[in-house]
Length: 408
Ligand SMILES: [Zn+2]
Ligand SMILES: [Zn+2]
Image 1 (cartoon, rainbow, N blue to C red):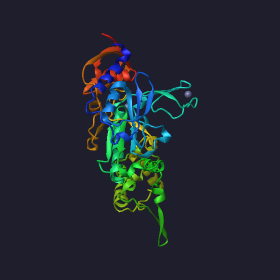
Image 2: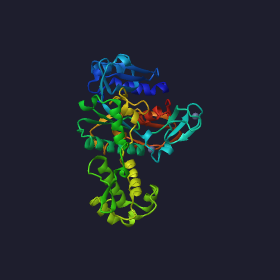
Image 3: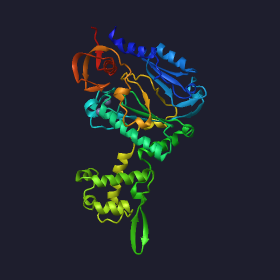
Image 4: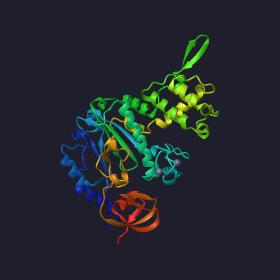
């Protein structure tokens, strides 16, 4: 076997035996399909399939590295963009570790500017700090801790979609992306024809942007000669979220926690019992001396940052977005994009349930890889060594550009 064809062979085997895991999206004949081709390294777009069997035989024939479908429904999905006839679009969210500043990304993620070669660690910037270039080569890793962070963001998002927006669990579909995050698709009549501006409103809501925190909630009420500052945190939506989050924070905060958000007196700690009773129980926010509006504002900002869901905002507002199809392989990992029930979100294990290649082994020469886990087996860390690995682990390392297959 020619080493560089290893991934092609494995992907080909997967698509030649289309199991039930390859399941096209709802109303697939109204959607545009796109493919990134492994051999030719080009993107093929504007494809339409009238039958599931047509799509499946196409996959086994061309062996793409990545398979996408439009979130949109079109009259003519295979026409050029301006002539497709947009009928509507699912509401989709992408939660990716690329957008979450985790403590470990400085260890396993690197980027280099495509223009000047400047390099850095951690989250890739929008603009190169050295030359202003906007194209980067990135070296990332589907790290367990990063994926856990992405899952926590997904949990917050799903709670908002259910409790604040009122979508039912049947309307919300949750997926592991196959790489470093999760996708949430809301598929229901009521979202289908929302325009970009409406979707931006939803993005702002889940991101905790564009609404007044406590400072603007204050109204001055005349009570005799004294001006009493009042703000109300009702038990619904973000107001409830802020109140619960603030209460939790005050209950367990340390001096370091307060300093970290710029609160330099410790009245929140010293008067904790009075605050929990009078401010949170009775809603008398101004009743504790030394806890002023500025303190509440700083606290509310911190809770907003903690409770908002870190989504990739451009994905949700794009009406023509292509998104990876469930049951297909991710070209950067060889893992599957898989759907799972919302109720399984907390216990979902991507390193077990998204593994496609469960048989055989391969001998690979690894340049570098951190420790990782697949199907209950722990691998690495590796540096400049040749090892015999399970097929899934070998595919992951080769896809990630960390290893090459060597012949026995
Ligand atoms: Zn640069
Ligand atoms: Zn990480």
